[in-house]
Each structure stands twice: as C-alpha cells, then as structure tokens.
Image (cartoon, rainbow, N blue to C red; front, top):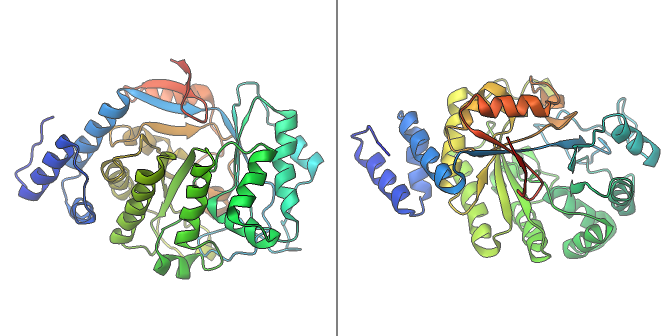
Length: 364
C-alpha cells in the first residue's frame, strides 16, 4: 500500500488499519472531515481486498412488498398508505402468486420481502405470505421482515419477539433483511420514525434471530438529519452486536431518497458523501465480511466506483423495487444479470453470483 499523505493523524489511522486494529468513533469523525478522500478509499480497498480479493458478489432476487398499508409515520417514506387511502393495497394469495408468476425467471434464488406495518391484518397474514411462497417456490430463500416489523408483529400478536421469530422460522423464514434500522440513535428515531422500533428493539430483534441460527443483514439510512457522529455510533452498535453474535453477513449504507415532497428533504447525498460513507463503513466495521453498494440508491456508475472504496457486493436484480422509488430514487426498478456482470467486469473485478448466504453459484 502506498499512502501519499503527510497528515500525521491520517498516517496513524493508516497504521491502525494495516495492523488490523479497531478504529474509534473519533477516528471515524476524522475520516469524515478529512479532504483526503483517495487515501481513505485506498485504506478501505486494502481492507476489502484482504477479506474478499477481487471478487464482487451479486444475486438474482425478486423484491416483494405484500402491503403498503402502514401505521408508522416515517418522515422519509413515500411508500406507505393509510387504510382506505387511494393507492393502498394488501395482496391476497392470488395477488401474491400473480405478482411473482408474471415476474419470474428460473434463475431467481431469493425473495426479498418488506412491507408496511399493516395492523388491518393479523400476524397470520405475514406467516401465510411466507408459507405461500415456500410452498410454490421451495427453491427460493425467503428474506423477509425487518427488525422493526418483528417488533410490530410482537405488538399486534401479543407474542414476544422471540416467539414471533420462532413462528416465522416455522413458516419458512430464512433470514431478516437489514431495513428498519435507519439510524440507531434515539434522537434520530424520535424525529424521523417515532412509531417504529427503538434502537434497542431493532438490535434485540437481530440478536434473537442470530440466537435462533439465522444470519441477517444490516443497513444504515444516511443523508437526512443525522450527524456524522450518529452514523458512526450506528456502525459501532452494529459491530458490538457482531462481536457478540457474528450473525450479520453484510452492511448496506443506504442514501436517503428525498425527491418526494412529503419526505421534507430537499437535497440528495453527494457522490463524495456516498463514496466516503462506503469507505468509512468498510474501515469501521472490521468484523463484517461484506459492505454492499446498493445501486438502487446511488446509481450504477457510483456503484462501480464503490468497488474501489471497499464494497464487495452490489446486491441483485430486484426485478421491481418500490420503496426507494416511491421516495424518489432515479434509477431503474430492476437490472439484469448481464448488466450486473458487465458493471463488475468493467470495474476490473470478478463477478461472483451468490445465494443469500454468500455461497458461490458461479464465477464469471
């Protein structure tokens, strides 16, 4: 590694990275404020190369949102509808199967399921959604329901979160997605998502899932009212839980999408912020194997750039993503396998098709 800087603090951080020492929140704040983005990228790339070599992973998956009816009032969301509101929907079995059948191809390996916190239907509805998909597509992994949804299910069912997760696993749940984390500080959550799970509840849901043998995902929704310190506190809380359980497979930084006027946000994140956050995530989360660049939020060109800033995964085909697009994402709603492979290869990396758990399906 060649570090072309004379900045004493940056050199100290670089030495920590080389020795595999954990960075502090104070180190992270310095990296967020340093103008030397390329040295930060170089350090993140070095860490990623040690963990993953030249491999970049992707999956053929389908995004499903069974309902957009939601009791929560998250200020960043353009997807939710109130019961009876125009555009509100809740898929029954026939609608769910029709949705999948009309978008299906035989290479799909994962259903990624996230929806509204719909109290108009019982917990059994959410169990049945998994059962129906498992019955008709047993070859597919079901990645369903965020940590915030697990807390919501506990409230509407009268069960504990552990009992909720046990029932979901019986129905066929394979893993939890990383959503619902937003920013894991109570100041943020009280302002931006006051009706959803608290910081501790979100972390508890994933800790319980890990205890039941599930490997899960973690996200961070950045670019609104949070401070840089709150982003780093979020990362630190995740790595503390990872130290305890080793249950997270990947971290996904998600740039907030503010086009929708209801979101109350006027600006998108900058390319500099996106790449800096990607790299800092790789450096701070030393106990995570993968950092994912989510092309839906940052676009395919920045996703390519992210592969030099510490990312080892670019997510998947999705087929028809709705939640980020309802908030104002400017990207397409899906992408083909060939496009993903081209994106990775033209960044000088090796495309690796994976399953949900990072088992290799094919190297291209």
